[in-house]
Image (cartoon, rainbow, N blue to C red; front, top):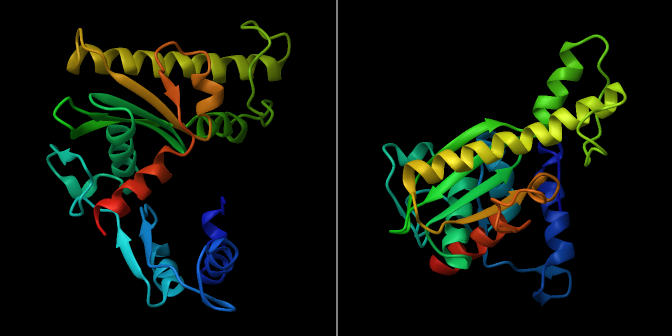
Length: 228
């Protein structure tokens, strides 16, 4: 279930829990042993605490067992979702690996052959880039993102869509190539895509080995099992 951050409340989360809870202590009473959370919006952390009530809350941070090490100057600045991706890719695909996560920003997270998170790349997200064009220009329309019919657009919409989708593939391809050249020259690297636009962008990128839409959630499951 996806909920906009503005609509994410304790009541909404409790309703979701009631619908999805697999185990009932008594009729009408749900029991969840643990909530596993990777939060990048600190002001919403209280929502989870209120909804969890007496259940344990495991916050995904560099201090919990991840199944991967961290070789990074300031681990506490790493986004929790990026740590979840690192945990998942190491467990499910092996190392070394690169995770390309197409979210509000597109992030590239690198796990070394020694199973250590070593850093990454952050670039503007696809939707953010196209919305910027719409918001900052007088004549360019708001764009729905899908595969362009051809590289050369025969209308403003088609030209924008071509620039967005094909151009974005170029950005992803170049960053992956640089990462491989700097860190993994001549080595086999697992490159896995996830996030909202992974299917659209990664579908025609030979550099992507697999698309795993639930990779971050798998990371939460894996971390939960390692810490219980």
